[in-house]
Image (tube, rainbow, N blue to C red; front, side):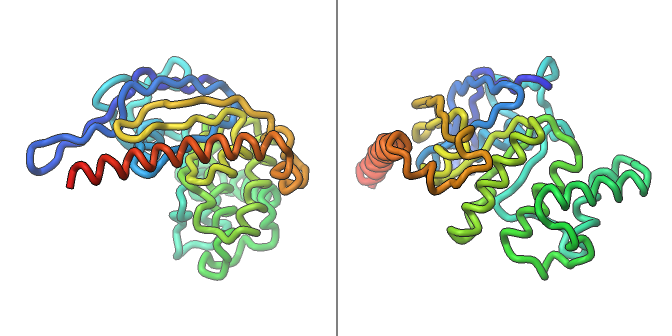
Length: 268
């Protein structure tokens, strides 16, 4: 297992009128092996852009990313992605979705079947292998997406608002599943979220990004992810120190949003 390192990553997008938008500026971050890190910030601060660069979907215009001693120059099975919408293959069964990566890698049928069965148990979907994707609820589809990602045995799991479209109860159950998988698999997880509460709960470290150009504004080391493993998450959220951090970060984000609105008013 290796560190995931972002070294002075910057990203500028060219517009049709010849101008550019600076989405990220000098983002440096080292994520340790087996660490779970949440990334939070106001809309438009470059969170998803940064995640896409870590995944290798985008090449930064400045700086670099590496996993261990290997530069990130494109998508790679060492870094798995879970999207807000599962991006599942609707024409395949649950089992075939989960086994897609190993099939493409040329694994033997018996090995694939055993791996799929094990992963469906891990995410609580045993008995659903023959179901069609459209027969599943949103939360169940995200469980399939997690299992499909794990099937490729990546070192790093990158999550872009994976629970954002779920109802409150399902979301809390899925938060518990993410923590369970983190502890049981030892995978490195980087999770983007708009929810302050979720960022506090699911991050050993929480990174707060400032508005455009996106950059690291604050960083917190937190105990709540460890406390939440196998525990009542609502009890964790009721802890006085959790509430204090939540209010502190909410105020920080609110001030950033006010700054963004102020810029917009000046521009008009």
